[in-house]
Image (cartoon, rainbow, N blue to C red; front, side):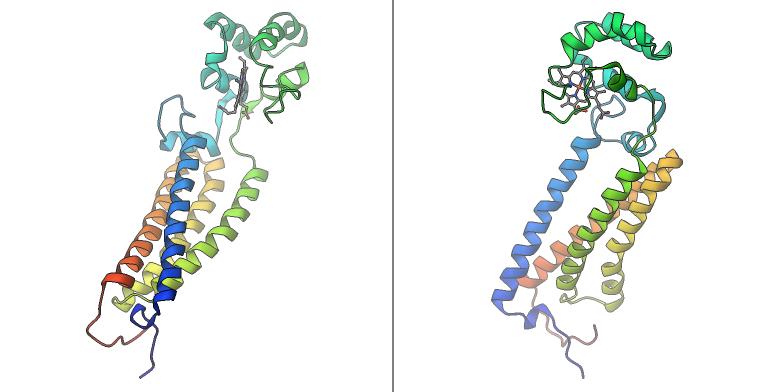
Length: 246
Ligand code: HEC
């Protein structure tokens, strides 16, 4: 009978190495969740992360501009009062004329915004120092660009494939019914592929945002299960029967 490797065959050093790896990946995953939360939370004006936030991230808000969205969102607090916001919103809706910009809008930006939004501030934020710069932020918000999705996709696919591969490699040393194991190692890969594909679909069909959330959640849950079951079996589970099949 062929002999397949199990945790019962692993040396203690190997189990320590596996444990450190799984714990580090688990922690990294928690930080990734935190990053997702902070980068999408509140896009819809409500605190917390929702499907609506995800929709805005990929599809955008087609009736909304980046400048308008910022003034209704996190940047509102940098204005002295609501009249200032109204002046800028009226200017955007009135067709963002250059003379009106210099007369009404530039003074507000100069006293409230360019402390952070200028090349001199070196904060890497879009500058608000000239008419041309500001006009760029008054086009409709169509969500993440294809270019940025392509960039994030390739980083995610390369990085996550390694993580899932090594976690899965450790997980297959567990004892369990063989079909359960075969399905469980494939699920996180399928989930991340569906997740990334659904970013692109959501860019054009906003209703798809829920697939992004479900597939992302499924990847997280299956990764967590693999990590926890592996850690448990590695240290606490002692099989009585001979393992039969991979
Ligand atoms: C204290 C520094 C600071 C000030 C002052 C400030 N901002 Fe911002 N702004 C930021 C930071 C940081 C971000 C990026 C993070 C975020 O979106 O909250 C940002 C983001 C933005 C964005 C979104 C850019 C994008 O990529 O879509 C816009 C538009 C914007 N600010 C406009 C303004 C306007 C208009 C004012 C003045 C009323 C202003 N900001 C004042 C720090 C500042």
